[in-house]
Length: 289
Image 1 (spheres, one colour):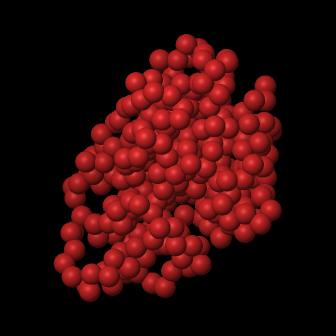
Image 2 (cartoon, rainbow, N blue to C red):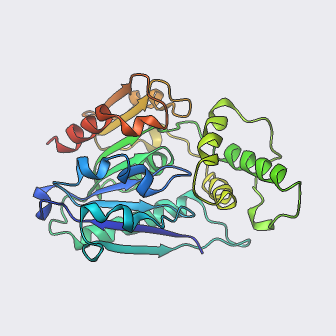
Image 3 (cartoon, rainbow, N blue to C red):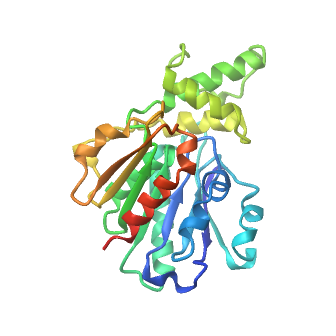
């Protein structure tokens, strides 16, 4: 049974210094500990505010508690999950995940000492796509938004087909579990963007079959950002100059006042996460009045 999980890491200085909690949503085929802990984001952002580390369906992070040991005792962390339904009769969709994220934020806000400020959002790659929809849907619960490596063109269905094709070749076209069959047409030669995604799927510690299912399910409905669903909050868009996956710069013109677009010189979709410029831009955006 898939679920949306999240872990609350208290501010290291205590009390959160008046900042709202920051909800971080990792990318496809990675984990919260890979995306936010090992890259230094917890250290950079966690001193003055509570951090909420989300774990997307089929992206369970068995090493998260161990990875967080340098930032406090496990007894000081809050662990939560929302079970989600996915079966041959009722397939999970991206909308269901956004709804679960909304439910999680309501729970977080209700437990926070200052529930008038809502939360801030930081999403990367697939997490940025979900954060875009979440901010647009829950404007009263989200104060500011940071989106990194946002793939403005939805390629998840193609990613699912490409993983399926790769797995089928590796298994010699053996029997498949019907629930893992992607819903789209037969696989074709993947685009350069999808080939880049496949590179980090191959290095991911996560199960390929579950990643295939995740890409298939979250491809519905297709992500279609535009004027009708643009977040109304001040938004920071960030992408690497050499990022073959993100095409978020085209969305910058849609964003409201107080928003900013930052391009990281020579950074790719993977190493953008270790950029100090990225982290400084996020801090400046979140700390603004």
